[in-house]
Every structure is written in C-alpha cells, then in structure tokens.
Length: 445
Image 1 (tube, rainbow, N blue to C red):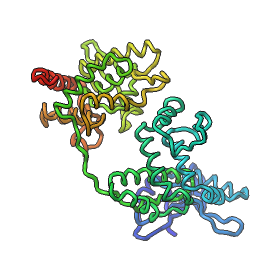
Image 2: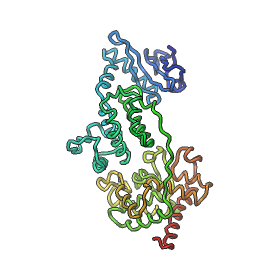
Image 3: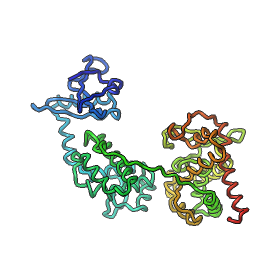
Image 4: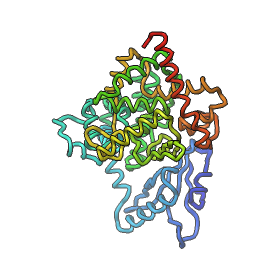
C-alpha cells in the first residue's frame, strides 16, 4: 500500500486510475503531527477522497471512516484518528458505534432531523417542545404553521426554501425511501425517486439538490461514508428569463403608490421599492439594519451588506438612489420608534427580520393585473432596463450593483469605486419614473 505524508496539499494532489486505492500516512512518529499507524486516505477513480483509520479489535480487522476531503481537513481527520486509536486502546470499538447508528436511522428519521437542524436551524426536538403540534408531524406543516415557527422559534433558510423542501420530502422522498435505512440507500434508489418527476425535469433537479444536501449531512452525522446521489445526473434546464414589461412596471408603481400609507402593506411597499431601485435580493433587504447605512457630507448614502446577508458570502458596499435614501430614512425612523435594529422587523417579534411579504405581493399583483412574474423578477428587470438604458459599456457598474460574484454570470471583473456607481444607482429611478410618467400621459394610469 503506497504511503504519503497526509496533509491538505498532498491529499489535494492525489488521484488514481484504479476503482479504489488506499494511501497510508507516512512521516515522523513524533512532533506536532505524528504519524498514526493505520491512518490513511482512500481515493476513487472519480476523485472522492475519504480519510480512514484501520485497526484490529478483538481479533477482527476494522476500518473507521473519518470524513471526506475537503469537507474534513487532513488535520481534523488526524485528530479523529488519534481519538479512535485511544478508544481502541481503552477497549472501545469506534466503528461499532457508527454501525449502531446506521442500523437504527431510517430515511424518515433523517428527513426529520434535516428539517429541524438544516431548514429551521434548531436542535432536534425543539419545535415539538415549543410549538403545540396537535399530534401533527413536521412533514405535513401548513404554510401558516411554517410562518409561525419562523417567527416564534427560528429558521435557517427562507420561507420558500423551507416550504418547497418539506413538500418534496412529503411527496417524493418518504413514499419512495421513507422506510429504508439510510445506510442501505444506493444510487438506484435515488434515481427511482427522481423518476417520479420525469415530466418536470427542473423539479427533479431541485429534488436531487435536496437529497444530495441531506445525504451530505448524513456523512457529517457519521451515518454514511458516501453520497448515493453522486451517480445521479441533473437534467438540462432552460434558463427562465421573466421580467416586468413597461406596462406592468407602470401598473405596479401605481399600486405601490395607492398602498404606501396602508398600515398593513406599508412595509411590503417599501421592500418592493428598495428591490425595484437597487436590484437587491429579498433577504438582503429584510435583513438590513440601521447601522448598515451611512450618508456622507455630499449626500451620498452607502449601503453596507455584510457577508452574512449576501448570497455569495462577501461584504458589499453599494450607493443608493435618492428615492431609496428617502425610504431608508423613513424606515430608520420607524426602527428607532420600535426600538429595533431592523429596518423591516417582524410584526410578531421586533428582534427578528420580516420573513415574508408573500400575501402583500399577491395583493399587489392582483391589483396590478400582473401574472407570471415574482418578486425576484424585479431584480432581473433592474438589470435588463439599466442595460437597455445605458448600453453594454455600463455592464461593469450594473453587475456591481447586482452583487454578482461569478465571472460567468457577470462577464466582468470587480472593483468599481462607489462614486462610479452613484450615477448608476440613480438611473433606475429615472427609468421607472419615466415609464410611469409616460403611461400617465397616455391615460393608462
């Protein structure tokens, strides 16, 4: 069996033409990271790398998986191997504990833990402890119940993600895999579950993403060594390119104006206006805090979006238009009155951000007579109209305003100065106002 010094750089370079090849740790037996007999990494021809610890317990050869690289680093795997070796010396079999967990956890149990820990970000059992479920399980949660849990207990993902994934689990995962042990699920079983959605390939891709995340977590929970979704292929998708037409945008502006002073809808109106004039994502808007906005002596207001609030996980600083600045000042005054840090606090708990404007958005769309578009399409509209108004030479500034990270998505490099972006921030305001004014002249509003 070949030997290497197991560290991140060496493991990263490992590859093999064989179906499976094992490499044992080599190096000094003393020092900061001493060699551990039996500690190694196995590599498949597809590039999957898993750390392991080989040992003998009561006369039986055993192998204990320590985690996949790069999710588990070489140093972390070495620590786990050291602890496993100590367990064996103390007459405790580390692999036996894993097998006990594997023998006991069904896919239904895994799904329940996934919903609680990953979707809602809560310890197992916390929802049942704090919410009266009336004998109902997590797989049949209704929209209002999801909203209640998010507002009163906690959440990790957005309402839409939680709702959609629970529906996927209830409709497709449990009927096909629910009674199986997690350790018994193979690629063929995953493909069978996906076949239930053969007429809707995009939904099948979303189900595959959910299952893949779920089984990746099962590896972290030491219930499995690998992900059975690895052999399933995604379907080709046609990119959705919906955005608001000029007539629809004009109608939406009119509806927002009519609801801006309504106590039930004023917050949602402000959220939509910020989205309309900045192209920001819903999560970035509702998580905005008073301290994230700063206005300099020239009147330029900058919006700091911390990495915890952005999709790409990076800090962003973008200027806002005059209309958005007015909205922000109004919301800051409201936040100070309510003694909350959020510009858009939850109506139930002021210490949490607003979780959804789904009902308000539906009302706005019905009033405007608009269908086939959603809130996120305002973001597409922002980029489309700016590009149309300013031309491709402004693509760099537009991309910065949208907060794109991928070069494939933006086709540009980052690094625009705030003053360069300031005119771009005000352009969308002018575009929308021009559309609304034109429709008024035409007698459409």
